Amino acid sequence: MKLKHAVMLPLMGRQADRFHEYQPARDLAERIEMVKRVRGMDGVEIVYPLDFEDPNQTVAMIRDAGLSVSAVNLNVKSAKKWQTGSFTSPDAGLRADAVADLKTAMDLTVELGAWMVTCCPLIDGHNYNFEADYLKQWRWLEEGIAEAARHRDDVKISMEYNLNESRNYVILGDVGRTLYLCERLGMPNVGVTMDVGHALVAKETPAEALCLSAEAGRLFYVHFNDNAREWDWDMIPGSVNLWDLIEMMFYLDRLDWEGWVAYDVSTRVGDPVEMMGTTISVMEMAQELLDKIGPKNLQACIEEGIPARTFERLIRSLL
Image 1 (cartoon, rainbow, N blue to C red):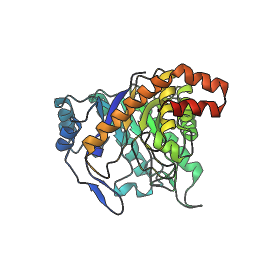
Image 2: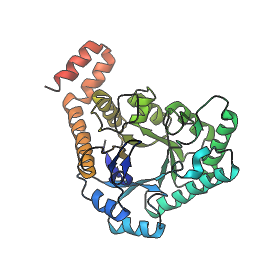
Image 3: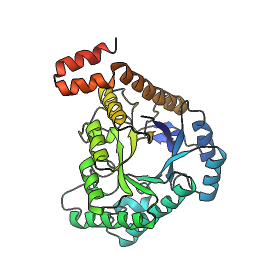
């Protein structure tokens, strides 16, 4: 296992909720300078269209900074026009706009040498019974992602699932539905972004969701963070669910993962540069703890299947 650590560029900028602004807005140049100071960072995840007010300038700035790019994250939820949906909007023109944005993001990711777009269609879904036509919604989603995937078969489209937010019920709410979409399309460049926090909120075991995606040949990208399984708080990995983090590392090691992992971790107090540096350090220490426990010992615990003995060994490893 060799992890490549990516920092989400927007998380160097404004962070807010309904009640407070925790970090101020910062322009792209300032955020690039900040991310270059993150300890252990190997690259960035950049967002379209947020970070591409002038696409040519953005590409030049990333190249001049010497930054590798893990993926371009397509945002089709924040602009006012997406209020009724993006890929599944009842308005055919808006659906076409979403597909066009995805194609543009695919072209930009090639310019940046990333070859992958990740997208979480959070505005697609429903809030109430009898609000949406589920049959049409699913067909529109399939048609839109398939059209974009045909645009460039050399670029991966990695679909990220989340149970809710912005919709009460997001159309890709769990790993099963996301893999079902991949299976329905049958296109090798459509896969899954597995976000640990989103798996937790969906009441999944993150490592199991990881394995399902990998076994299907659809695991393209992994986001790490943490929460208490009730809301997507984007906390430091392992700060709440330590053993879920170690189990994720165990299976990434078994899968011999050498791809990117990115960190969707919010900074509500303190400095985002420090927060991201600490996040990467925590991940490195999790790898060290996995090595200390021993993957072979963990496999033996799984095969023995006695939780009392397993957790005595796990807790003892912390002493």
